[in-house]
Length: 358
Image 1 (tube, one colour):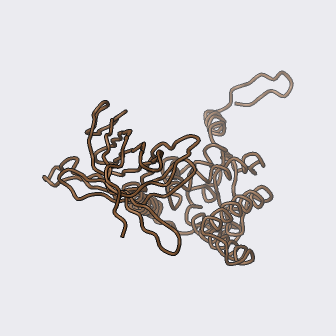
Image 2 (spheres, helix red, strand yellow):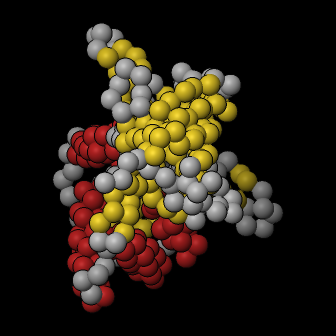
Image 3 (cartoon, rainbow, N blue to C red):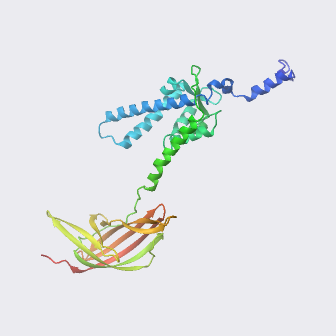
């Protein structure tokens, strides 16, 4: 099939000519030389990335050293992230190649094999943060697997419409078929092995008990106290319920040394040893954080007991020469296996027997 140069009409040629014309309309530019395509660039691309990370790591350490010994680990991570974005964007926007890519003769290109625009480089650079998740660029490697041998795109490449191919001077490195799947599987497995324990044992942020606005608390009187508590709210898997009233005996102790006095609160508990916490004065009252108490909350499929920790915090205000107290106390428990439970109790207490003086 050919086009008449004067009339613009098409006239039929031989069958071979027709086949070649149709084939040429379906083939992308990069497929004209498969020896430069994304699939054969995989091994060189991985090598280039490793070299780039090593260079960035050295640069980060040198920069952190120049800032002094006070640089924290979090600051170093921020420096590494900033250097990484600047490094990849600046070099790839200019030539399509970082130092690592230049050494191993690969370059960033469009899917048609052309030069990527500055906007495309910016998109693929910004999205590195998602490719790197959760660790070791596991998400990016999974994306390379999903996009297949014709494209081999990480998440940033998919969004930008780019890939990485060999440049004209590059030679395909022998790449075993198992290399990319093995690297992807290893990165994913290591990420899971590191992240899961962190999630399982992550620090529980215990919500504090409410303080008192405009606190005018006096120092507490030491001795025996009688306290009555009323549960004001309960949610989650708490065993408490709103409206429940509880009677407790308190003991407030005073310890004076070096001209300064400290106080502690001991709460008697049924069928348990008493719980003691230091009373720390703050602007909204006297704060107390009690030792964690452990309770069973369920059973495993094998019959083992699952426990959850109960965190107890309180804020107290003392009036009447320190002989009358009002307290807000929060109970809070949370574990992945049993969920969470929390309850709030308001206490009113009076001194019933002052401590004897020597």
